[in-house]
Image: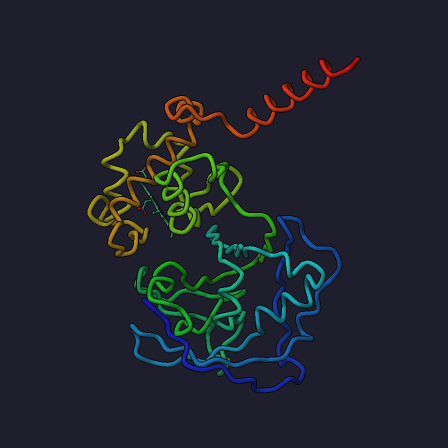
Length: 294
Ligand code: HEC
């Protein structure tokens, strides 16, 4: 299923033979004002090695970073994360440095002009990649990063994010287990299972469906670790083979329980949420000021 990209080469900086398709570009979820002339970007070609097919495929596109430079020149330095949204409801978050490290390319056609498709190991079939397919040099990544971040196709929107997506969790206020659950969820589940206003809509929202309450912790953990065992017709990838994958799946359940009822968590841990602490502090300050008045 892994695609390793062997080399990148600039073919020409002439005009495109084919105009790049439309790409929606957002900054913190707002469509940016003004048109971005994608056809002004240099044409790049890449040879991508497909492990399942043992062949190389040539794609053509533009550099992700070059696109970012012309799209949001003033704001690029503030970008923390990039969310890519696909036509099929998939939505994934990548740290900004992944694009720098891997020389990511936004491909929109094949070099040989053939059908813009790829073999999917998970779906065991050819899939259409248009309008955009993200290809990058996977060799620039550690094996761990390769397990976490994969290639996304059918991209229609790029959202540059300058604030961290925290899914309603203040990481300073929760324990290490909820933090692990939040991180695991964001990296491995959010792309298909939306939460609040974030994420993809390939499958259900666990909070809206009350999945944990209705189906139980064990079912949920088993599904995350080995979906094919629970549902032979599953379209869901399993949690990658990390040493602590069982702990990660358990932490996802704790994180979802926390999301359902944060008050219960704070009560058990005797923690006051930040906003309330702030309110209390403001009240104390006002009282102190009132007292200090002659
Ligand atoms: C690529 C998309 C995708 C990702 C990523 C994904 N899922 Fe799923 N998930 C699905 C789909 C589609 C279904 C519906 C049934 C099926 O195909 O297995 C599903 C179903 C489920 C179910 C069963 C729900 C029910 O009501 O029976 C659970 C539990 C689940 N996912 C947990 C997770 C967890 C936890 C993660 C992250 C570790 C995750 N999923 C990541 C696509 C995904």
